[in-house]
Length: 115
Image (cartoon, rainbow, N blue to C red; front, side, top):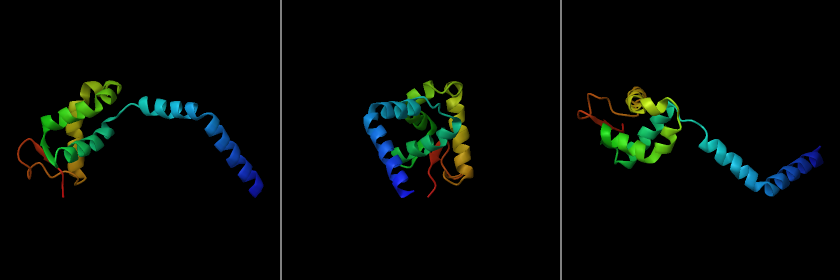
């Protein structure tokens, strides 16, 4: 049985080595052709706030998302037309999850990461 496992592993490694370009193409295709969803915006908002020093005005977060995820947003179907609204939804979800400070604690219009 152990010999069969070694043979299978060897065959798989040989196939990957011989077809490296195909494997890379498939991985890149999958990565490039998966549409973003409004759930992705939660991670993007957190990343933006980290990059912006832990707090930022809504417009700064939107600009950051556009700068870093323009391609993702354009390729995301309906999300392209709703992403700024959905970004606000994401912030509210993050407040519920205690990842952002509550709106009444932060200055008006400013989103802040929770400690």
